[in-house]
Amino acid sequence: MSMGLFDDVLGAGESLFRNEDALEYEFLPKILPYREREQKELARLVAPLLEGRNGRNALIHGAPGIGKTAAARFVMRELEDESDEIEVCYVNCWQANTTYKVLLELCDALGFKFTQNKNSTELMKVIASIVNKKSAVLVFDEIDKAEEFDFLYSLLEDLFKKSIILITNYKSWLIELDERIKSRLTPELIEFKQYNDKETRGILEQRSEFAFVPGVWEPKAFDLVVQKAALAKDVRTGLYLMRQATLKAEAKAQKKIAEEHVKEALGAMDEFTIKSSEDLTDEEKFIYDVVKKHDGKKIGELFNVYKKEGGKASYKTFQRKIASLDEGKFVTLERKTGEGGNTTIVNRKITDF
Ligand SMILES: Nc1ncnc2c1ncn2[C@@H]1O[C@H](COP(=O)(O)OP(=O)(O)O)[C@@H](O)[C@H]1O
Ligand SMILES: [Mg+2]
Image (cartoon, rainbow, N blue to C red; front, side, top):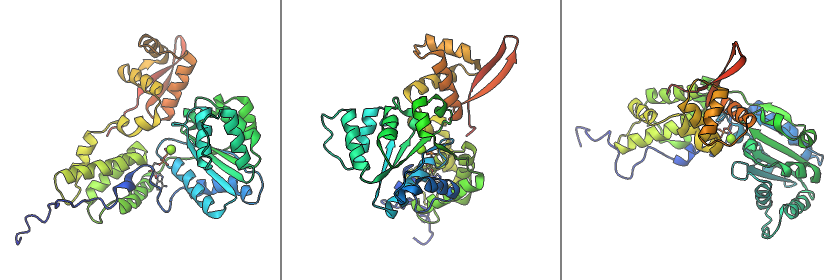
């Protein structure tokens, strides 16, 4: 092919991906940069377990998509390598949102299979008998999605040596927690701050080295991905765009991922594509839909619309959900002082992709 006409064309069976799985949100890279302080803090809290003493508890909090889950899993992995005397369990409370489901997950993580016909009390006994021979680090991710918290109380009471690590996007979640549990938990708060632009770039570069055949990204296209991820302040936006842009390029049999492919991917994206399925409960989605349709209303008016459209929650719960949407970056709240006193205006948050 002397003219090189087909040099830019991707052959059948060729791919721009080297390992597409590396773009999965759950993918855990070999090193986790920019979170050294947070990982050290976590390590310090669980360290007493290594010496046979009781550990400390933690509440990790911060916006979505900034490495909270990744950092916790990283520390867990290190700990598993370090010692056989510590059981390490991870439960996502989005999936396991009741006491019974959480205890089933813990049994599973502890290798106990005979869970049929056992109720929560019996499962808890099994867990205590296994863990109390050793010690345990128990991580409960997306803890705000749990609908019951009895399991926390039982674990705090019945396990001798443990660290309980809770992760949430919403720091305000702790305020609502039952006093009985809070006073036993007394967690250290570990705040995850958002990445700056340079860190966002570093993370996406590292990930792209795992995911792509070297040299397939045109620098301008990659810059655009970084820019959008930095704007959204969410690494997942970058991962999502990298994958979608690459699929666009491949669909056109291109050997390079160009700016136009990223733009196409951007066109098909909104706040929801990236975050919704993972971060919002059905009730939160319902409320968010109400906000979307009635942008810029006072929170009281919005509550009336919500009721009319079939919403069941009390005003207090509604306010709390709105506050959590705010922390989750789905809405922005504006406090206004008017004649009738203070009020809150709820606006839909729009990242200008
Ligand atoms: N410091 C980091 N280094 C490498 N990858 C990171 C880092 N922080 C976040 N990520 C990646 O970004 C994505 C979102 O992080 P995640 O831990 O799921 O966020 P969160 O739990 O805070 O919502 C994951 O795929 C994660 O691997
Ligand atoms: Mg997470």
